[in-house]
Length: 167
Image (cartoon, rainbow, N blue to C red; front, side, top):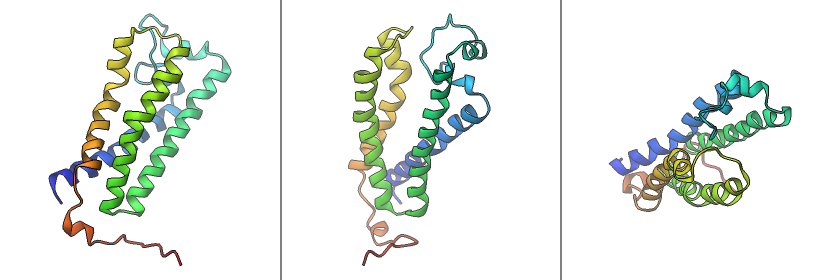
């Protein structure tokens, strides 16, 4: 495998592993962590996350773990493709999909739907630096590995471990 293929392989596995590591403890052990700078743009002057969590309305308290569950579903879906359909072409398609999500879909949702209707305590440049730089950086890696790193000639001959026949 080429260096670009290894980069694609590592970047594709980074998302499900990182999301699982962040969201499983937040959902099941410490839901108040949804009110920390790692998960939400909160003011540094806000009370400590456990105190802020206890004063948060019940509907809002349910939304953090619920949306975190959707994040875990996405991570499981991507990991399933990478594990059970482990071909170079699958990795290339996952890179292209993640590129579109991180560079087109998520910014449209964030800046078009969430930000205009929210009350944030951060200035807009700070929001971009803290909340978008990770997605932009990783999205550019996905753009490169999905659209510009070719499939290795040796890898193109490989078949999936469990090919599905559609007859």
